[in-house]
Length: 140
Image 1 (cartoon, rainbow, N blue to C red):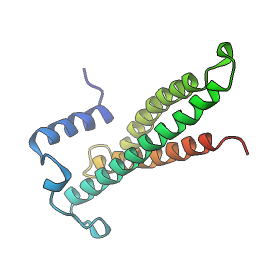
Image 2: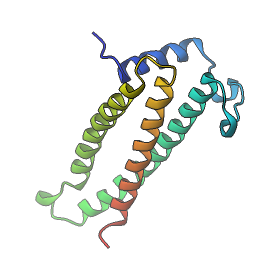
Image 3: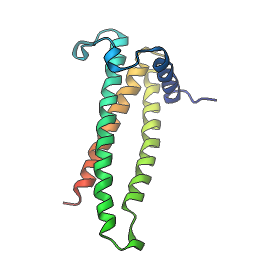
Image 4: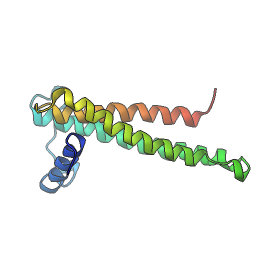
């Protein structure tokens, strides 16, 4: 049985991918500064999350590279920076999904549900990107 909330959003996203435009270029252009319809608001929220996710993935690669360098400078039995980073990221993904699922209940059943979930995903993802950047910069 599929969990409601984020699971339903993922299911809806899969349906949209099947029935919707094949790429961003195929989507109608939306002025996200002046989005009015719910469909436009949802599309803009999705674009915002996609941008945040892309930035996270780019920062993840940079941070992982820095931590691999830390590991390389430590005797083999004491290494673990990359392993701990990976463990933290997996835990963060669980947190992100549960946090945004919980946030979605604030508008459960309403037309804003998808936009609220996507907005949460974008916000939490941007916060994680900042954490990863700060980690890569090391202790000051």
